[in-house]
Image (cartoon, rainbow, N blue to C red):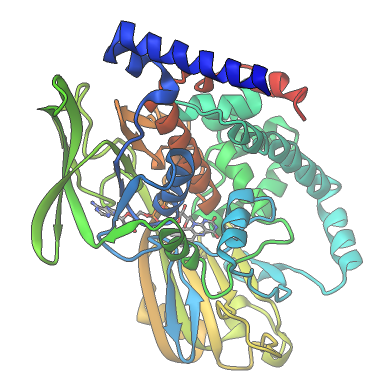
Length: 512
Ligand SMILES: Cc1cc2nc3c(=O)[nH]c(=O)nc-3n(C[C@H](O)[C@H](O)[C@H](O)COP(=O)(O)OP(=O)(O)OC[C@H]3O[C@@H](n4cnc5c(N)ncnc54)[C@H](O)[C@@H]3O)c2cc1C
C-alpha cells in the first residue's frame, strides 16, 4: 500500500513538474490531456447522421453537445406511408442478418425486429413468369439445378466468400481502427481483390468466375434491378451486396426502420434542428487564453429564418450530389465542391392499395391461389417495372396472414419512371389509393469509378456518404458513421496509429 502511494505521488509530481517546465504547448502534445470538442454539428438525420451522433457520443463522451440538422424528415431515405389503417415502408426496407450495427442499434434502443412473414418469389420477363418459387424447398432446388446446374450454389458460395471478408470491418472498428478513404477501407477488408470488385462490373466479375451469361441474365439481373434499379453493369462490390440481399433471414424494424433514427437521436440526447444547412465556412478567432482557435460556421435556414452557429467538428451525412443537397463551402483549402461528379439514380416507389390483375403477369393461376409476394423482372424491353411486391405493414398484427392476390391489399411497384394511368390500369383490376415517392435512391454505379470522394473533406470536416459509392445500404451508412466518428476522435487527439493501418487482418488475427 505504501509503495502504491509513493508511486502515485511521484507520478503526480513528475506530471506537475513537466507542466511547470514546458508550459501549455506540451499540454496539447499529450494526447490524453487535450480537451474534448464542445460542439459537433451533423448535417442530415437519416441513418448515417443519427448513427454518427451515436458513435460520436461514444467516442467523445456524454459532455459533447451534438446538433443534428435536418431539412426534411428524420429517417431520410427510411420512410413510411399510411395506406388504409396501416403504415408501409416506401424507402429502405430490408436488413441483412449479418448487419451488426443495425442489430446493435435496435438492441440498444429496445426495439424488436418485425415479425417474419414467409415470402415467395417469381421472375417476370415482361410477358410471363419464367420462374415461380414453390413452397417446397426440394422442388425449387431441382428446378434450379435442372436449368442452371450448380450455378446457384456457386453464387451463394461466391457471395459468402465476399461477405466473410466484408465482416472484417466490424473487428477493425471494435479495435478502434479507421480509414481516411473508401479505397483504403475496402482494401483493408479484402485487399486488391476487393478494389478490383469496385472497378469491375458485376457481369465482368461473374463471367470471370465462370458464371454463364444466361444465369447472369435470368437470375442475377432481376436481383440487381429490384435492389438498385440498375443492370448487372453496376460495380461488383455493390453487386455482391445486392446478391447478399437475396439471402434468407432478412429482417426489418418493428414499427418502421426510421424508428432507429429517431431512437438514436433521443438516446444520444442530440438536439434536432429542423433547418436546411446552406453553407459552411472555416473561421479563425482569437481565443480567450491567447493565440487563436478555429471553428466551422454552419449557416442554416429554419422556420424562424436564417441563423448560424460555430462548431469544433462538422459531419456531413447527406450525399453532396446534384439534386440531393446544395451546401456551399467557403474558406477551405483545397476547395470543396457543392456537388461531386456522378449522379443519383431515380427509383419511383408506388404503393397501390388494390386488386392485382394477375393476367398482367401472363399467369393463368386463379388469383385466389396466387401467393407470390415478390415479382422480380428481367432486363427486357417489355419490363416497364423493376419489381412488384406484396407489402406487409411495418407492424404485423396478431394473427396476420398475407392475403392472396384475390384480395384488395397493398402492393409496391419500383420503376425507373412514374407509372402512367394506363400502366396502373393494366396492372390492377381496381384500386382505392395510390402513393408515389420519387427517390433519388442510390448512386448510378458505372465502374470503373472516378475518384470516390474522401471521408475527410477538411481538417475537422467529415463526409459519411462517400461510402455509398462502394455500395448504398443502411448498414453501409452505419459503418461509415462509425468510421467517421473514429477518424474524428483519433485526429482530434492526434492518434495517427489508429488510422490507415495496413495488414490489419493478419495483425489482429492473434487477438481473436
Ligand atoms: C427505394 C429505396 C429502397 C432501398 N432499399 C434498401 C433496403 O432494402 N435495404 C437497405 O439497407 N438499404 C436500402 N436502400 C438504401 C438506404 O435507404 C440508404 O442507403 C440509406 O437510408 C441512406 O441513409 P443516409 O442517412 O446515408 O442518407 P439519407 O437517408 O438520404 O439522409 C440524408 C438526410 O439529410 C437531409 N439533408 C439533405 N440536405 C440537407 C441540408 N442541406 N441540411 C439539412 N439536412 C439535409 C435529407 O433530408 C435526409 O433526411 C433503399 C433506398 C431507397 C430509396
